[in-house]
Image (cartoon, rainbow, N blue to C red):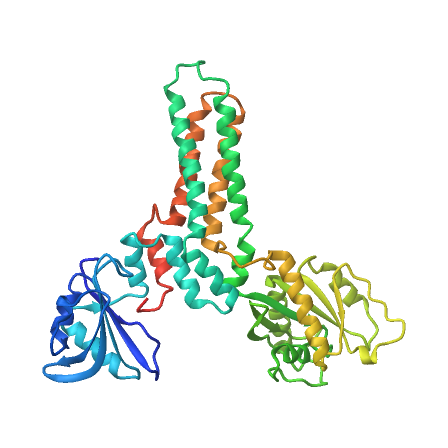
Length: 454
């Protein structure tokens, strides 16, 4: 694949100041010489990292006036010869340049193929390559900061440290096979067990960042639920700062989930307003209530609303008792019309509000922020955090390391062979995270999520 020269538009579609067409591969300079006109110089004779002002031409027809930038291998993003045509933005100019480049011998790049070449050519490991996608998709400053740290290699260093520990243990385990029976020093196996425990503890620290990584990449799913007419839609509108959901005194107005995106203190948030929870004969409303329950089951944080102007019945008490600790905030609404002697006993934090007043909305946001920060450690400086793919590989590696420790703990020298095998499997799992070992399906799965041109 690296024998091809690829090209793509690297800027988003639509009107703009400039549009960039990127070309990478062994024929990039030859193609640039063929389609680019400059009164003095040619791209292939130009020094690297210097702009040329000229024209892209096709059969003597001027396509666009452009700035052309030459980056020579290996000092480019892909470690190949790269040429960028920076022309006028808009719907047509970049497309015409791209057609001209492809007619000269390039082919259209696949999604993520530029970054995939950067990985295959050793400029990035697989963790850093994924950070490029995280940076592009970042929905908050915190998410962008974490992606930059991962791109700089801080997460890779931690995975490499685990990998190096495991490979050293695997080598020493295999070396024990050279000892005659019953002549292995007594200190060897305890030392190997300790080193595996240290590696396991290091993996534990990495696993602990998953919650943070999940929130920064995917956003916190915050579900608002409660009985009909408790003020769920009013609260959603207040949190969003605009009228998104219909507010009515008629029970059952919201019959389906309403979803919107937002950000609280640098944390991406997906708000979900749900149908009121009650028994109903309406088939459509029942479907909406089931969807509400499905969202509640997946929620990172649950805002359960109670109407302070109505008596608290057994259904509300039962619902509150089943909500998960650490992931629930009870919202008691309509405090301006609260019943006398209203008593709310809950193991969860409680906010008493009037959902139509902004001062109370800000208090709800502060409580949400506190709960999320306490769960994830996001009150600290943003740092690189593992993804779901990393978590699955770490989990597999930890199971193998635990198995190896159990085998060695028997004290039988014969278990060293089996323990060595399990450590090798753990190494493969960590190696897949970094891209030290990979298969084409894994790369396809990762880079297919990229945009074309990156």
